[in-house]
Length: 246
Image (cartoon, rainbow, N blue to C red; front, side, top):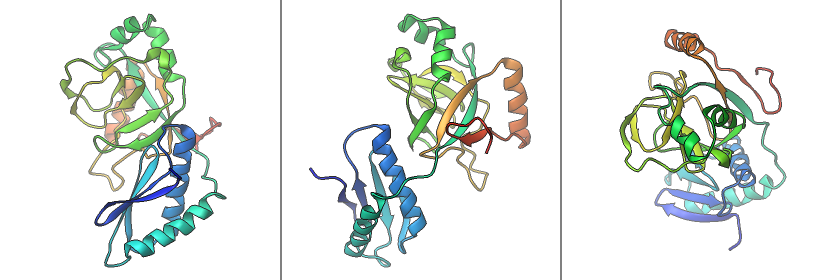
């Protein structure tokens, strides 16, 4: 099968498929093309949804027909071969690990023959790529977790996981943006709010951004939480490869 491929997904949507694998390189193609679409502002296109290896495009057929949109996309795909996406933005997410905030940290360590300290170090070391958001508003699907801390999901999901909980499921890690049921192994919690419907920009993270988890102690967690609740906390953000704040 030749890629990229344009495929109908509904009466008012189509998908541009770049491949069938999950990798940083594949997701780079997706994010680069999504950036081109955002800049192009094709009349009638009102939403794009990037995932691991494709973009779903929603459009208004009374403004642009399928054949016209397909032609525009084919032209943009040719241009995308010569385009490069901008440098990745990294956001630091403070996390308090273990205890009441991470009740499964002991199990993750035991399952992998590690100490809790080793699990925390391995989890907080990588710079994770956000492949996409899904499941609940603002839930980041992250790539790049060290397989030495991979752990199966819970056999029986919890009925309620607190917002901000950081978990592991198989070879993936992620953060729950709101209270929700779930079956991930919980190893910590962040005081940051990933989803707040009261804000004009309700979702903190975005596909294509990078995340770095930063371990904090109880005092630091409480201080950050107070600042978040007061609306004065500003997350540390910088360009990939640099520790300087943007």
